[in-house]
Image (cartoon, rainbow, N blue to C red; front, side, top):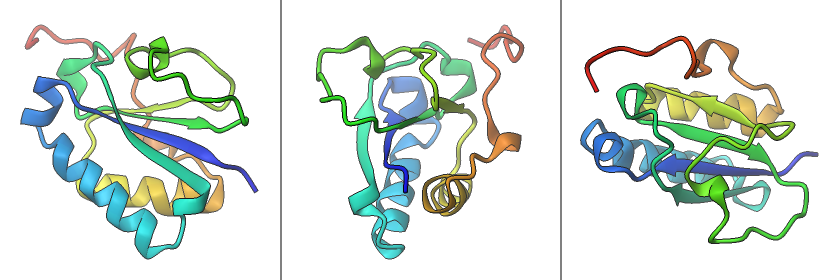
Length: 122
């Protein structure tokens, strides 16, 4: 059974667009589904995709010790098992926890596409 690290952006634009509620939904759903032992939840820094936020990154936990100064807290690393979700809502976050975390089934229709979903709204 896979283990995960789930990071919700805490940048100012993501927070203004509801990241705190997305984080709360992740925390509550992980707890309700008894998935806390399988998933470390934390607040990441800004990933630089502010126009697509709230942003969430899910990575498989390979047993590597998490370095609090690692760039993984503010950029996509391109690691195997890394999934970036954009335009998150509490409802979408619940679905990510229920499918990606609980069933090891990433929710492809919610994947963010940072290279193709750019706009000029900043």
